[in-house]
Image (cartoon, rainbow, N blue to C red; front, side):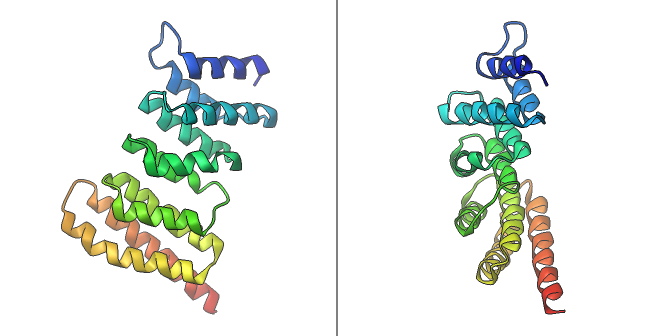
Length: 191
């Protein structure tokens, strides 16, 4: 992509287009697909600045955090953590959580995700947090952390079933899938 194209996308991300009310979120998606390394740096900086400003429309924020995940730049970690836990729009939280899986994470990230599993009112954010917490714990290969994730998921499963709300099937399926993956990882280590 030419440098001018990236500059135009960043301008579109921040200011839209008079003839296109969807220009900002479309620019966020396009920035997430940039492959040139120097252009990626500009894209990441622009997406982080957008998220830090807290002024963008919710759909633009959702696609911005999704784009940050695709770009997989570690400098987005703090913004993604904040959006995962604090954004007022549920899809932003869910997309930000999913994007964390592409970055280097630590035990604190997993613990934050487990808080989301317990406390977030949006089933999509809880389902994402379950999968990403399990994935990161497995990547870190920290047995205490893996057990903490297992315990949280085992405790959360009956709570989710009792909620009887839309999306519960997805959350319970993610709990079951994550527990199976964690248990299979243990079995492979024992061999």
